[in-house]
Length: 390
Ligand code: AMP
Ligand code: MG
View 1 (cartoon, helix red, strand yellow):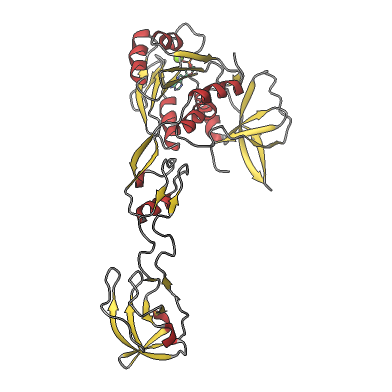
View 2: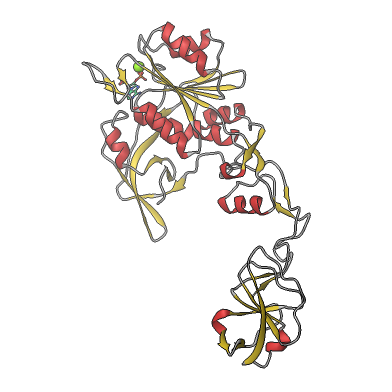
């Protein structure tokens, strides 16, 4: 049996960043950008009005109020055919190009109609209410750097420079297989001695929260034939999560089936509670996690073992689980000698996290899991990991 740190190290050593792929910009949020993005144009590409109003020569409006002759109207997307002369103005809409000769916009709220002319009520400075050509970025400027985690605002930048796709790190394809003769998919009818499959939907939801669509391989009963055929399918993916069947029972056949299919065992059993029987192995580029079947073990294993591997594959610089320091009201003794993860409620008071253990019947207790905000680990310091925003 190995220690938690060693297990995590082994997992991360075997998880490699996936190659880049071209994806539509609207699907790129959250991915790591795999190319520098340069602009092919100036932004804005022309001097444009930043307000609805009247394009003027600032000099003409300097002694406002002043009356100007309105000689036309420019809509966004249109141009104006001639140069503005002294004493003239042109009605202009936000986003429309400034006519030649003009250099500022008197906003519509600061004007008044006066006998077929326009009265500018306030003076404007040169360049006021105008976005100057190239003021945001210039041609050949780098607008987004390789290695960055793409945000929704970056998508607007890609679009503004005319890109409809970018190169980004691939996401892993993840297969989920649940095992156990007692497990029935929710929606089907529950017969005697059976329970519904909590782990499958829960793992799918966890993956979704990390932006990963998973492939559900169904539920295999505890026999070599069913396990083999499902696991074979799963080994075609980047990551295979098998829940159940990795402990010490007579029908815990998963490690044996994995070995028969050529999966190289990296470790089996980690000194953590819950989740001790965790199996980790590889076949070619596929990472295989055999996760003990109790839902709380499944959930914790995902947080502290599976997610770090997925993050590394997706190219994130922060792939290790984040543990923060917390405080407990009452002394808490875990005594097991194992790294013991205890479900806790977390409250933040004056910038400190206060942890309160949640009563639990053990690692099958999903109600305790759903009441909790995180897992606490009591060591020299009291630390916790959470999956919520606190
Ligand atoms: P196992 O790891 O297969 O020995 O399962 C340990 C415990 O977790 C048993 O009580 C199983 O019934 C339960 N269990 C296994 N798989 C699931 C699942 N998909 N959903 C809910 N409970 C499960
Ligand atoms: Mg089982």
